[in-house]
Image 1: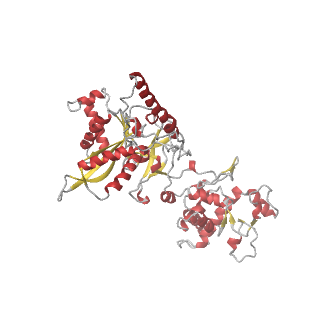
Image 2: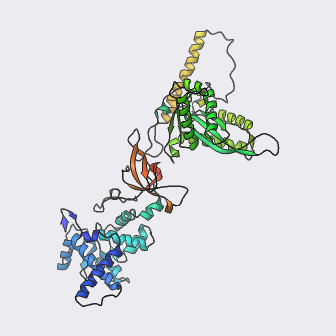
Image 3: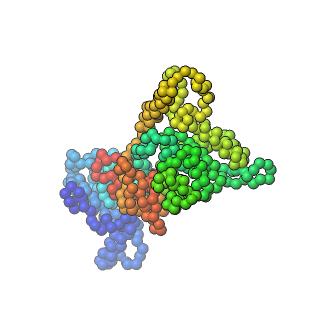
Length: 516
């Protein structure tokens, strides 16, 4: 039956999600009718001919619903409607009342079903069951294998598109394909594009572990140590500190050394490492209690303390700034140390030198203009010059007034700000990747939490319970609930299971498939 322009299929057909169940139930019902008429003996197992008769019965039902004009024309022996989608197939009705492809393969050395396959409508639920059955018989094969197995007996108009859409509904293939959505690159935070004092807003990460010896000489055991990498948000200046262990107390000590040398920072950004979470809790208690141990820090923070910002769990790409700083630090460290085990003092000295190298790197590519004698580096914003630059001769003996000297220093500072705005900030404007916007998830969608530690068959099933949109309205982080707990995860760690809202409609011939 039809409802407007949409064909409504029988409810009993829509109840089944597998072809073999539909055919077995139909075959048993047909046998019961035959038993009532005393044509067969009850109690015998189903015969393949009974299952095939049940399949042909359902094919006649769906063909009568979707191709009434074509069936009427083929029964009367005339050509179909000129606008019919089956006009090129030259359809005909066989002896069992099923619409088949006439085609041009009458004299081919092929079985009858291959020369004249049964025509099935692309928008029918029966077609979905047949494709799912062929997909399982081919051991979850691809589009070509599934379509080749289907065309041994059936012909689907726009078959490749329909098969591709149905294969993207397969949960098993979706789990092993592990395709995760990637939202577009977001806007830079305000601290990244606002010039302030260096290290006022700081990104933080750990590098390591690295072996550290207690002292020189033979017979001394080594222990694991770590490197705390602090990076300034807007100037990309780097500060390195050696941390003796992975405890919050050791990190608090490294943070105090950093604050004493670089000044108190107002905002610290990091991932959700246990060390940083413990340090944040310790700092909050320190600022609230204002003990004698941290009274000078609490006063300097003006009763506000350091505002700690954590990235979502399992989202290292949210902290690309300090991840790149860790990579640069390891680049120099591996080539200099090799397999050597250093003492705490030797490693601290080496890290200070590496810090000077990193703060002398150009922020942008060197210019071809001969008038540009040096590139802008993070060291310009710390001491006014690259940290590895050769000291310039003193001009104290030259005749110049204090006022002109002050204006000269102001001009140098303004020149650095101008170069930072003209060279470095403008280079951050384009989105170098993640430029395509994708469909946002919805509350209630099913997904699989991807993990690099377990195989796809053990990834837990979850449901999205809450969305966390960013400042630009794009959802990059969601809350999900599994059977045992609840997590906050970026959507790049989620494999979205196929749903009806993400599968294109097969009634539209121009609709691209989900895999293109």
